[in-house]
Image 1 (cartoon, rainbow, N blue to C red):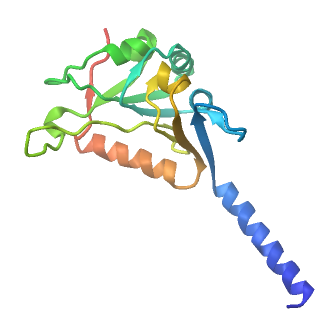
Image 2: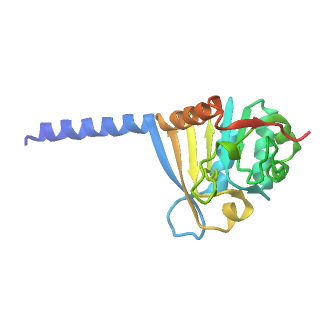
Image 3: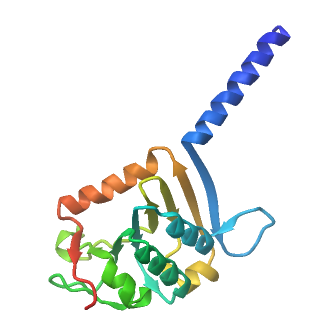
Length: 198
């Protein structure tokens, strides 16, 4: 192959890679022992995502407690007027009520500002023994453009002591697609709004 053809192929490949990076970037996020790899910690990434939100923040969590730094970041978002939506697991949910421990962990300002959703027991599939599914999703979406997916719950242990792995996606279609999926579940009544703390 002539050198000019090789140079043109390399230039085209470089242009394609740069274009793809503009469309979407993916970053590995980690909590746990350091390995020498340059990985950002889950709490740091989540706080950054919350602080970067310009209009809308959607957070889904299985467990929420003992996370003052995240509560502070969410209060800042509330003060900026960010539309804050939380989908929180509530294993004790009965007839539209929620165990408020998760909301208490985030603080009254966040609970008062946020729209809170749950997956009611009546909407959950059950197996032959009557056991129901759990809301085990852990993610955060800012402005339909940035998506953090993580194994970490919103707990002190998950954000500081456990081994947890996640991905931060910026740009591309996936943040929007996940947000649209959750919004469709809300529109269909699979996830239902509940009252926050008074």
